[in-house]
Length: 467
Length: 110
Image (cartoon, rainbow over all chains, first blue to last red; front, side):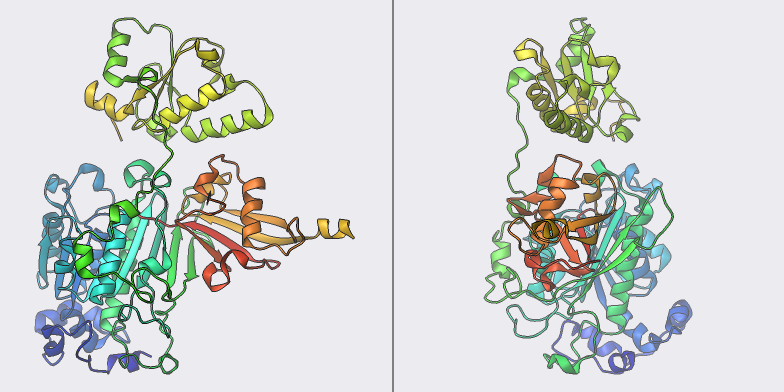
């Protein structure tokens, strides 16, 4: 299989047919290159040919965070000739446990500049191209069209669908990964790229073929809320670089013969790609199900982007169709309480200072890990999931609504104030407590602290450790 | 006869990943005995399994994080013996003894 692909000259008129890719394979490696890349060149299947292909390749890394940093290190180290990096954010202290291409001394710097500083130290030979901006439907085509392979290292579904659609329209292979808390996922898509609309045959899927619809926003949490273990996202970023290097060195993104009949081509796991999932468990050692390799389907006939009769176009995307933000933000049923059941963090604090709230229960519904870092004086912690679970059990099996509250607060009749991280869970909690009759038919006040601990930090106590 | 069909069950394992285990007692792997047929006597398929899980296994009341309009919610992949369920017939796939059904939430962070 390797023989097949390695010794084949890169055909023209394909995704990798940049001038450099056509010309480069005949040149010799410099002494510095031989020295630097020798350990990977002697790996069977790689060789000088593979190395030259890497040197003549252009890779775009979108996102310079927990995936992008480790991915970029190996992409740069392996000698990919041109490395573009897209990210509009700046380096923050809370990034550094996982975003290992940045540094404490570069906090506040644009992430692309910071990462490129690090990569130049690692390997000065590649050309590094910074794009200190977020990818948008307006700039995506111009940036992505310059590269041979795209790595999706972003952190939100709207950008993920945008990247995939552009890769379909521009014929680019896509290496996609994602990670949050203790889980990671990795998949190679649109490789080799096939013209949009071709469906009679076995073709590689795009992101939309595998992940037809985004999850509702209410079910999604960010790394800021759910947390993220550095080695988990790091592992996925490194694996992404591994896939990209393999694709480019072995020219897996180039069909052996353009649109050849599929039976003649060796199985390369591309047309029905594998979704790798990694599950990390803080309570046990690595086990038989820590890694799973899942077999996904090929291109879907009715895929919105790459399927039959697709109406997706570059011009349309640029003009705002489809609307990625809207597609990824279906309406939610999150509560919005009337004004009389809410109080601002500042007003709560002022009333408390004036002694007007001497007798009340302050219920904090954040996760216990968040609560452990600090809370408003006197707060009791019942995580939101617990609130819902207990409420459901009471509705089902009977019992007193007071059982939801911690014992020390359960038998008091004082007003209840509810606070959470950003002010959504607390509103739902207020509604739940009323449903369970804890408001005593309206006689007892149950009030939401609007904006949660985020508002508390912003308006009351700037030193509060909001995480 | 009715007794026999009511008591017939299929032993399977059901796995949850990507955060969904949170809805199922924080356990990632459940060995369950699934009734071999639904109330109408049709062989148990994935749609029936999903309903069964919601009624019997889910500890968290937030069912909308798992099902939506009577179907699996967008953003959850279903895998039958490690293959995407679309390769197996999706909801209509008839469950076989010792099948492994994996529900995994798609991730977006990075």
